[in-house]
Length: 339
Image (cartoon, rainbow, N blue to C red):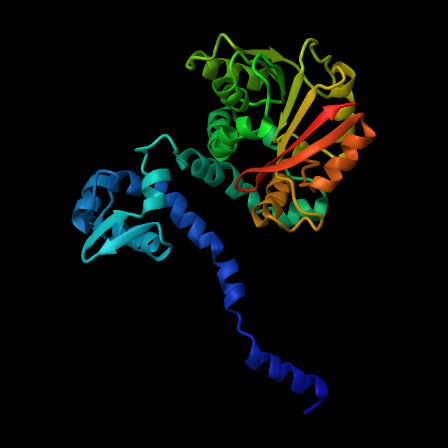
């Protein structure tokens, strides 16, 4: 046997393919989770533990398919089985049963309906250098699913933002590309007398207006149609927020955006950048590294960036980076001041 053959044989004894199987079968776990959520398995068990007959009756599934779904969720740790009775695990009870305000089901629906089909073309998007279709080109019926999913994904980070942002009472905030207004609403709820304007593209701004009508902060959070890339930023703000916007654009475009904001900002104005900031290697946190694929399949220039890269952008556009703070999950906050 050659030296190369001996080394290969030794390697076969030293390593196993389990990690490859674990990663490659991840799509099965994802689709099982999406299906269980869509079919109401967690919601049914939110009424209390049930045996297979009871779960089937509550969910409308037959016994065979109820067992397949429930046992897969037990294997994944999202359901518990005691004898012949199934129950939600603690994490499923909080985030998937629909019985608490912390509802992740809209996020699962977004990933299933929008992300999962697009991920089937990840190799194509990476090979071409751009997605087959940008997420902005989705059918109108999917826009509410997208908005609700993004809101669910960022809910914990929104709630953590006020403490990390350190805005003074009475601050005037411009939430640039603020989506449906959830970030601005979280700040208005926590910071006394803060007023905010969501500056967003017209089709998203309409969704934000609808959402704001149902909140007690509609008198303190306004919505203004606009485009940060081409439009004039409104004057009169002492704090600026870019939440989950940087990852849509190239470094050059992000520097241009930061420069445009600096032109509108007085010295000492605050800048808040909430995004999937990574370490210098772009590999940690893991969820942020994986999200780079999500952006690649949905946006022409989508990517994740490191906090160090953001610091360089800020220095070159008239800002001074002051802090980098974790928010929730892979989302963190960079704060800066206008110099």
